[in-house]
Length: 170
Ligand SMILES: [Zn+2]
Ligand SMILES: [Zn+2]
Image (cartoon, rainbow, N blue to C red; front, side, top):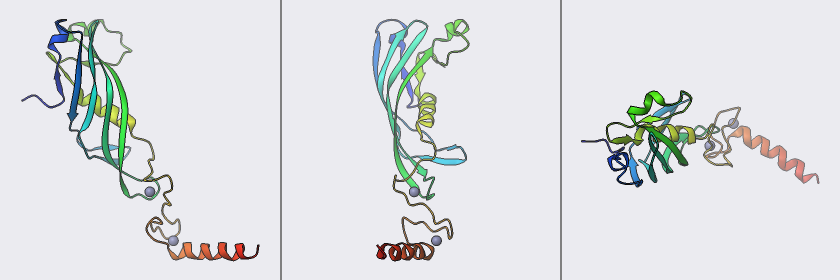
C-alpha cells in the first residue's frame, strides 16, 4: 500500500492535465528540535495544488498542524497550532542532472510525489523558537523554581507585600 503522503501525478507528467488539486492529511511522527521533543498531535493538513512545469511539478499550498511544545518560560507542555505556506519543486529524475546545483528540490518517484518529507521540513521551519504557552506566562520563580502561573510562592508573596506597602505611602 502506498503511504498516505504519496500523490499520483502521472496525469501531470504526461501533460494530460496542467494542474491537480491536492487535499491531504499526512501523519508525521514526533521529532526532536534543538534538544526539545516536539509531539505532533494531529496529522498535517495540506490544501494546495500541483502544477506541471518544465522538468517537474511545482506544489503550492497551505498546511496546518497541532503540536505540543514546552513553554520556554514555564517549561509546561502546551498545544500550538502551526500554519504555513509551501511552494516547492519536485523534479523528474530524468532532468536531475540538468538542474542547477543551488536549487532545492524533491525527486518525483515513478509517478508519485511524496509530500511527507516536504511537510515535515516546512513544519519544522514554522515552529517558533522559544515558544510561550501564553504571552502573559509568568514563568518560574527564579528563587524557588515554582510555576507562577499555578501558584504564588512565598518568595513572590514577600515581593507583593513590599509593593503594597509602597503604594500605601502615596
Ligand atoms: Zn509558560
Ligand atoms: Zn519562589
